[in-house]
Image (cartoon, rainbow, N blue to C red; front, side, top):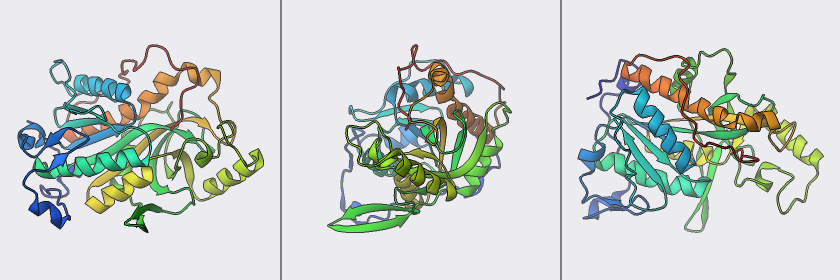
Length: 325
């Protein structure tokens, strides 16, 4: 059993996630299609004690994070089972922590969040926090900087998530939990790792959407790219990724605490590619948000924090040029 200290998890008195979809009351069995679970499974027994859902893009990376979390939370080193019964996502339970691999981009994370919100609701879990971790491209910050998102801006540099529903474009605000963001920042006390609050630019794809010059198509100049990135910087953006608008909008809509914690791999005002030294330390950079989030979770659970604990390498050999979002 895990007892939450008098921090964020106890600010709301055992609040269960409500689903505002009236059509679900007419469903006798609800299918979480892409998780391979249904309401005929004993979801309450499986997930009722979940207090934290931490998600990232890569299945391999998030499995390694789950292994690291298991050791840090002093849990038995039994084999971690992927509870996702489809090939779409990854789902590992580590005590009160649910570790999830969400894939790449807004469509993938949007589908997953719908089903995770329903899973939390049907399992009767309460006061669940959602945290997205990952890599990102920096804007005017040095590689290795941890950016905790205060806001998410879309590619038009607006704080909104756009979605077409029944042929009409709907715009919803991208609101992240500022108290949670500040609490995460307070857990970062390593003077060798630069960390900050900042706005995040959420692109719609990896290449043209991020103003890169190395895609199959490019109809703009490097000067155009720099002008756009400088405009984003002037609006407070310090990094770029591809999920924060959907994540923040849906978490706010569901009424759950949401935060985004990413590490920067490059400074896009300087280059589109990682430098050779940063490629060499790729695994260490990827682990930085993981270590910070585990510190936060341990503080919430009242567990002793081991300083400078290294996470086992997620990959033995870093890719020649890792992706940056």
